[in-house]
Image (cartoon, rainbow over all chains, first blue to last red; front, side, top):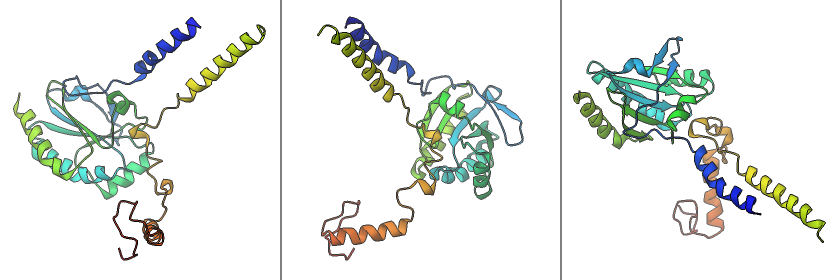
Length: 165
Length: 77
């Protein structure tokens, strides 16, 4: 019976160990290398020195559709200032993403993570979720979901991070 | 009686193992919900039809709402 009790005591610890690490502000952004549609690999490490807006999206996600024009705007406005918008698609089927992109084009870098490995590394809590990564590769802010009333705040934060060299 | 106890213990161990592993199924992660988001996976296949049904249902039941919309059961809203 004592071994049973010991096993029961270990159980919560075992459950806690399986809980994934969530990328949070202040942490170093987990490194990744993912392919673009053309096959070219994009590594987060290559973008050190630039501010990166990492956005996880899927074709079946409504708010993602609304975030695309805004992210294109951000890339256009702040690209020269050092911002890279890097959108990570998590669709299992590439065709679903392509269909979405025909209707909702994005003027920024789009890479594909069909296995969800990078989404798991960041422990994404919802679709879409964005991570603002500073020039040193550190996560500054995490935003889950995309609401129109949050745009201005996120843009202001991007500007602050761009200015702090 | 003493012959039964080890058997009981085994049964308890197996039952516990089944219970614990029963909880091991992990719900889909947020990025894995593509299939669930498909229209065919919704409870209501047709949104308009569902709204119409709700409307009739709660006016017939003379109950106020229950579907997020307030109402007095008169069928007028």
